[in-house]
Length: 157
Image: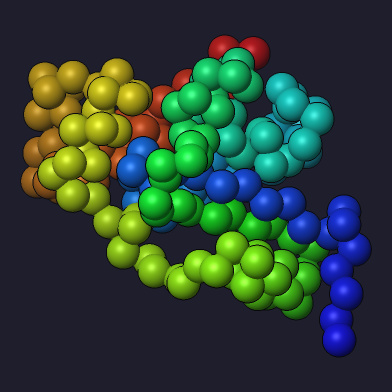
């Protein structure tokens, strides 16, 4: 049986209602890793740094309020970052068993309800959305604006 060293993986859980596609998560992880590499990180843990970027909030408490889970949360996005794929797969397996969860990537898709929630959470106006929407459509425009908010966080140091 494979045993994972505690420091070999970092886990973060988001409320899926506020996650704008897999790209949102991908760029949050990328920005957090870059912040640690450049020694520009706000928090002491990679998992918390990922939450900070995903929420586009510098304050940890605000980040947790914006994207964290609550007792009534029914759909989550789990992020696992590790030093190798074997440790990540093992951590996912353990977490899935303990949490009795099923993998379902549809929680990352944007619905009209999610678009409204994300717009409100990231303070994105209809005008801002329409301005950049162009030929790419609503989902791409919203995702790009959320990623832009995360990128702006890195410049506010």
